[in-house]
Amino acid sequence: MESFRIPLGDWVEVGLDWITTSFDDFFKFIRTVLIGAYDGIDWVLNAPPFWVAILVFAAIAWWASGWKLGLSTVVGFTVIVGVDQWDNAMESLALVVIATVVAVAISVPLGIWAASSPRVSSIVRPIMDFMQTMPAMVYLVPALVMFRVGIVPGIVATIVFSMAPGVRFTELGIRGVDKEVVEAGHAFGSTPGRILRQIQLPLARPTIMAGVNQVIMLSLSMVVIAGMVGAGGLGRDVVASLTRLDAGLGFEAGIAVVILAIFLDRVTASFGKSRTLAGTKAA
Image (cartoon, rainbow, N blue to C red; front, side, top):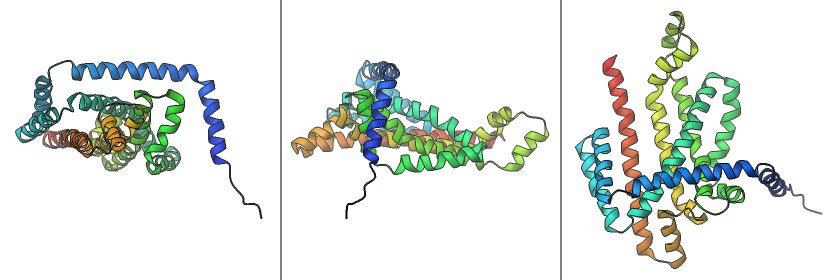
């Protein structure tokens, strides 16, 4: 008996071929924009001496969460310099910044739309389930086909992989706002846009910021995988350590990723908490 097989892979290849052929100019434009943005952020991060950048990061951490995080930031980033991973860390940080900005710019409005429309939510939810459960490396294949080897497929794959928490948390935060508060806004004649800006978004900010935090963490988790397609940064050294079985190099690049992750996690988490406390006191 002849086995039955669904030619799903063949359909995907045909679809990718059609997309790359039909939208080649669009992909070239996206590639140019992302490369320009990446080069600009990478220059800003690498242009000043490392000690100036460390002081800036420490000041941000101090402002967000106090002197303990500021001091920890100085120690952590000094360790990155000490293991000679500063340039790679800044390249990875530039990738994370671009991917996070784009992912948040897409996911937050999409989450707001899903929160305001049950039909949109029913469509978006299975798509987000698919995006979150699909293995991260699978995203690299179509990204490579569309954008070729380099930093761009790494950024695109990171954006797609990290969007889902932003959409989910935004929708959850908007839906979690007290309905009586929203109804009071309607009773006073506020427009839907004003209710969104002045009631729903401020009250949902802690949940939305938790989503942004998760977007950043997922973006950083893609740094190593993006290194497989020539994205550079810390991922490049991790991949090199795998191919050469160099445990020392892998650990040095890995500890730099951990330090970046802790810094970004604490700063974004503290930002959400500080704004929440400020809003509570003001109320």
